[in-house]
Image (cartoon, rainbow, N blue to C red; front, side, top):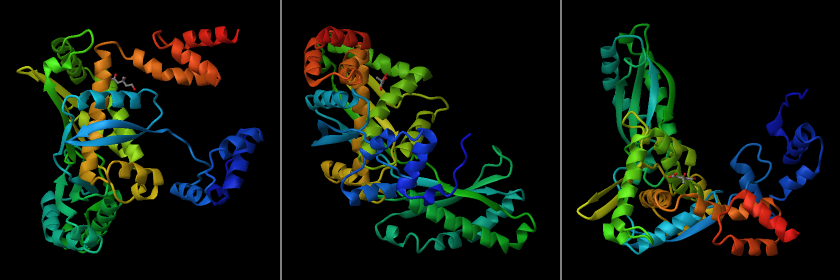
Length: 435
Ligand code: MEV
């Protein structure tokens, strides 16, 4: 039986690998090669990556792709995208080109407020707590003066602090609900530091507030919320319905089918989840490329998709007076300074590629990436189906799985230009070639 390991994080990288190989790979050193082939020969760069997380043993590559020709608010962008799914960058490029010829995308930031809570237990009289909060509020704010000095200088900082009574949903539960403007920073560390200081001050002041008697409020925890419906961005495309004409489909029929597909995603959860997953293909890829926290974005976006009490589409479409309109509204708490954005060389590169946007601008670009991805998916779904394009892009993965040579790959690409791709068909083709 395997034994637990102690002091693992204190071991050197080599010792950690040695332990893994001995414990899980039967001392087969060929696995060390796999790990080592992903080391960067630039030792400083490797050290930078090793320092991002604890117990790093190597790097894990994902492709960094680009989708050009995104016309957004009148300026042209090339979108950096990091992800493994074969057809996503091709779909993004397809959508950007389609809309380049129809006026491009527009995007606007609706709001940029972030929030966090100090979660409190209190089983006494609510009025006493409210009085205490009102008296103490200036001290709570003053206690984060040093923390928010720089942020305030730049025009951000704590915006509001409120006491919320949530005891009807959970007995004895109250919140100090705080809102923040964090400008170009995603702001997680700033917000959490402020909240923890506010919590400390709150408890210290409560300790000496005699009206509580022995029933004092107690801080349970302090943390930012990744639900950010007040950090919202909207992106849109619009054109005459007649301009939507496809090869074999009129603009009117295409638009009607497109709107119908969006409405299905608005009313059926099973479809909405896949629909929004397609949107996140675009959003996550740019979020990741720019060194932002895609888990925070995912959590916030999906919660927003459920804001009406049921899970629904993040995009909307309509046809009015012969004009097609398609838009997305998403909460995106992004940063363009601090964190990985300024540490990871490829994140820096991605931000440079996007013309060093402010966080507000990046929100717009990322929302467009989501909208474009959704447009490409729905366009395929209501016309030729998704598999045609998807399997074309997946062809190379299948060929690689089969160990195809360069010459075999070239022949396969020609052969499958007009023929449906399936694992079986590709396998048969390669077998025939080899015979
Ligand atoms: C695949 O990654 C994404 C799609 O399933 C999205 C959708 O169905 O809208 C194609």
